[in-house]
Length: 83
Image (cartoon, rainbow, N blue to C red; front, side, top):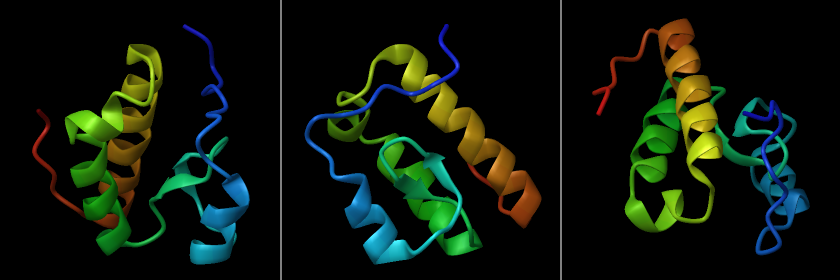
């Protein structure tokens, strides 16, 4: 499994930076799924678990993103359902 998430052609990483600023992202390559606050962690977990969002990544990238969200949840004291 590669360490780096693949660049998506349908995403402009500058939009993530514009919308959220220079924060931690579960997908730092494409600047998707900010995980800098408890609210963002919960939202990121919800979004990556939608089939249409997860389908934009390969299986390894989804696993990597979920692992990063779980780590951020623990850091921010957020409980998430690990499904």
